[in-house]
Image (cartoon, rainbow, N blue to C red; front, side, top):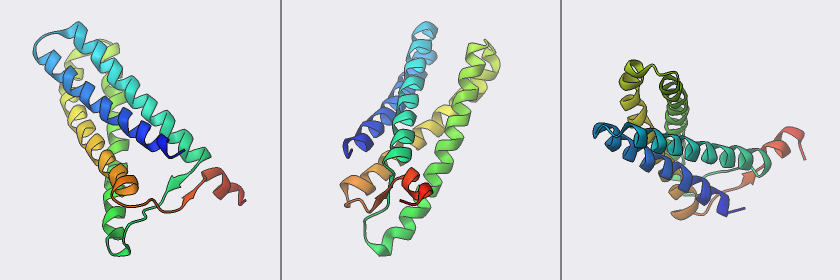
Length: 151
């Protein structure tokens, strides 16, 4: 199951790349291509979330395995990332909803903000992945189900 974090991280980074491409497309007035690319970015983010949530529920989350003297900094960074990701997800849903309801004026106002939040979410998510699985050996992984049921 060690491949799942790599796969999920790939999809969140892909979603940010697609959002960046979508931003360029809309700036060049290529609205149909913008719509397709942004939907692909949203699907990529959804795939990330489904893998992440499934892994969290059935396999668990991996604790930080790096040196104890930087664990507090990692934890603060992780909390920042979680808040950013949650905010970005809410903004993303609202932005997509506005677009699908053809409320383009509001979509144009919130879209750039959503994109910037999403870029930072992807960057910090990649950093969390690197800290957990590349730069340091991951710590203990505990299944949410095991933790709740106590076995």
